[in-house]
Image 1 (tube, rainbow, N blue to C red):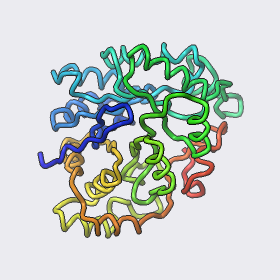
Image 2 (image 1 turned 120 degrees about the vertical axis):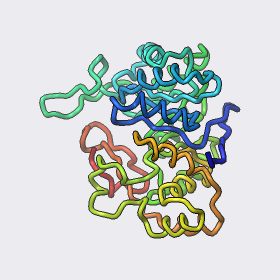
Image 3 (image 1 turned 30 degrees about the vertical axis):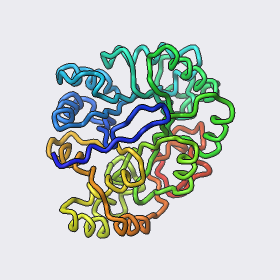
Image 4 (image 1 turned 90 degrees about the vertical axis):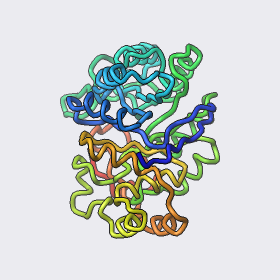
Length: 319
């Protein structure tokens, strides 16, 4: 497999593989897809409680026979379990689903809490999600305790704004190892990325192909990012596809990327996005920034104004 096997060092000292395998959506296809990914050479697997794919990931890992210490497994705390007293039990449930006794990384999926309870999407009569009363700082402090228990090797966040992250850093004691957020050549967020570098927080890019995902309504009336002529032209030079160039761009920024697919050929092809772009390639891609955000649940959930101080706020779809 023609891949550089790039890894990045986290502020914990651990290393995270630059290309991970995303498992959002297509729940029933994930065991086979993860098995294919592991066979192809992926060693970084990203899942989440809300995806419903943790058991599939666990089953595929077990069948692969790959030693646990050769894998980097990430999962995420869902919004209905933000109460500090619920955090460790939620982590325990994820560990059971995954068939492992520790995580490499545990993320808070969103800064917002839903109503506490077993309902993952508690809704009122108006159809909107019912907001919880747990503060994300308190939730994160409970996550810090899971580090001490050894149940996770690192903790982090996802989908935070600048103000939310600044407050978290001010009021907690463990700097997040990772912030997982939407990032791609059409949404480059350079100032926000620089802030993370200053604080020693690694970024994992979700949706590294931008509007390739059909769930993103705001991306349907425009060309696909991976078909952008500039990416295609750079791809020709390196004998790569536009999609592979998009992944390589993220890696060139020092960020890990988590593409997803259930198609064996595409699973293998995505892993080959780990290659080195020329400086002029990176400069060309930097000019593609449209400040175009495709994922924003603010209106759909009706409880929180996500990404309020970040680029792309006005362009985002309501998911």
